[in-house]
Length: 236
Ligand SMILES: [Zn+2]
Image 1 (cartoon, rainbow, N blue to C red):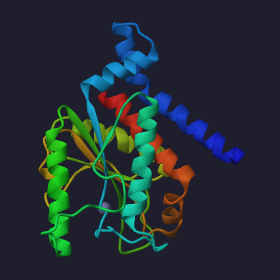
Image 2 (image 1 turned 90 degrees about the vertical axis):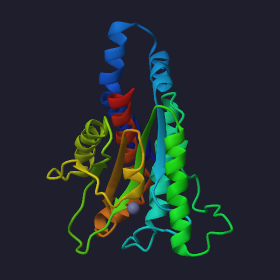
Image 3 (image 1 turned 45 degrees about the horizontal axis):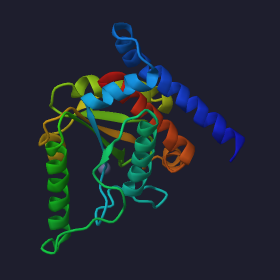
Image 4 (image 1 turned 60 degrees about the horizontal axis):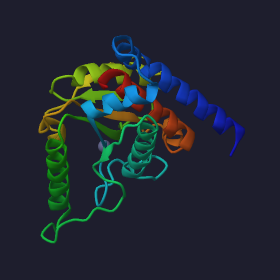
C-alpha cells in the first residue's frame, strides 16, 4: 500500500471524527458511555439506506473518461457502507452490483427502469425510521462546472442533512458557490419516499479533471468519509 494513500485515508478518518463529533458529544453529555456504545445507540434509532444511483441497463451519465456513472456511484456507495460499518452502523443498500435481476415481464429499457425505481422506492418505504442517501454524479453540457451538489427531498429533516453534507463536501471539492437545493419534482424516487433523504451529486463527469478524480479510490474514500461523517453528525 502506498504511503500517500495511508496518510490520505487517515486524514479522511480524522474528518469523520470531527464531522461526527457534534452528535457524539451531544449524547455523551447526557449519558456517559464508551464511543462504540454511543454509536450503537444511534444505530438503533435510524436505518441508513445507501442508494447507488442507476445500474443494470441504466448506466446513467457517461463520463468524459467513457465510464458509466452507475459504476462510480456503486464504488462510492460501497465505500460509504464500509465506513458506516466501522462506526457500528449497518447500512442497507438498494443494489450491490452493476447487474440487476429484472422480472421476466420487464422487456424494454423503460419497463426495466420503472420496475427498478418502484422496487427501490418500496424497499425504502418498508424500512422503519430510515434515512436515505442516494449517490449520483452530475453532467453538464459545458466542461467547466465542477464540485458537489446536494439535493434534498421534500420530507422532514432532509433539508438539514442536505445543508450539512453540502457544507462538508464544499470543503473537499473546493467549489464554494453552491448551496443545497430542493430536488425537482420529476425525480420519482425522491418524491415518493417518506423518510429524510438526500441525493448527493458527488461531482461532474463532464469536467475532465473532476471526472478523473471521481474514479480514484483515494478521492472516492474522501467523499464517502465526508458523507458518512455528515450523516453520523446530523442523524444519530
Ligand atoms: Zn444520476
